[in-house]
Length: 213
Image (spheres, rainbow, N blue to C red):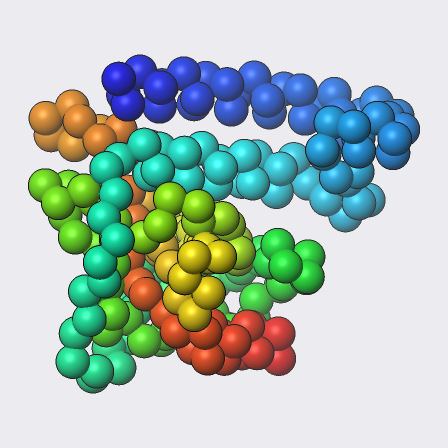
């Protein structure tokens, strides 16, 4: 069932991309966009940003359709950098993104990119498909959406989610491969993060400060 929904959502994404082209080219009133709960694009907005946003929601839907657990797995603190946990993420050459609390836009320089690559990854909320997948609550919402570009033009994603039920926890998912796929058994179709990093509120605020500097 999840495979079918994932394929259908991917098809819908492509159709929405076509619709986005028409939205960008056609004058639409602010009142109409508000009624549809769509933000009016800024002059600097790109189709790529809209598609990335839609892909993020599809990824979230696919993740939330898996069984969920509510316990956390805590490891002894050693401050292991994210790039050590997820070496396939690599070192991007550029990055951009936004957060959904303040709608701040970020253009990430080399120092900001290093801040992301070096976040503390000691605490994981991945518990394995056999145990339900992710140990997070079912009301998580996107908090921070970052898109990175590699030297060869490929993308890397870094998404952070937050829940009112766990206000002091932030759930970070780095994606070394943003293309949806199924496993070797044809199951679990969707985008698969290379890590599931549980961040504290101070760690998340420190990350925001680093990428804003």
